[in-house]
Image (tube, rainbow, N blue to C red; front, top):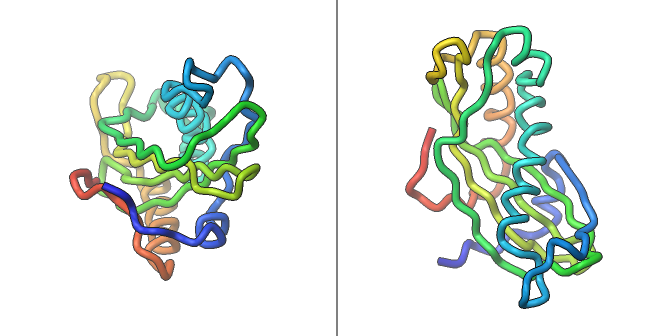
Length: 165
């Protein structure tokens, strides 16, 4: 299933979360970035994304909380090669009392293409019980504000249709 075409300028208007140059050790026998590194890069980009909602490492340490990925989907659209410059952008698409549903877009800045889309449902976790928990009001307020901002965008998020917060 191919996602709808989204103009790059709409994606790059989202918060830029992460950027990197692809090293040679990320390549596979086909000469492009191996699939394991997509998840690695999206994971690295996830930390600043949730930090933008108040869920910083300091917050988690002070409150003995964390985040748990419940499911995710990676859509591979274009090759990424050694030396390519990539940037990752994020968009919140849903939220509930305990979960967020978001997309991240990997843009290959070297080639001017959308390389991959990552979709994730993540939950807030109480590390004392190691169970999902309700977001505290201050965090829920920040999540709601970001969701309102991203819901107001003039383009539909290319969700896979089987996940939700």
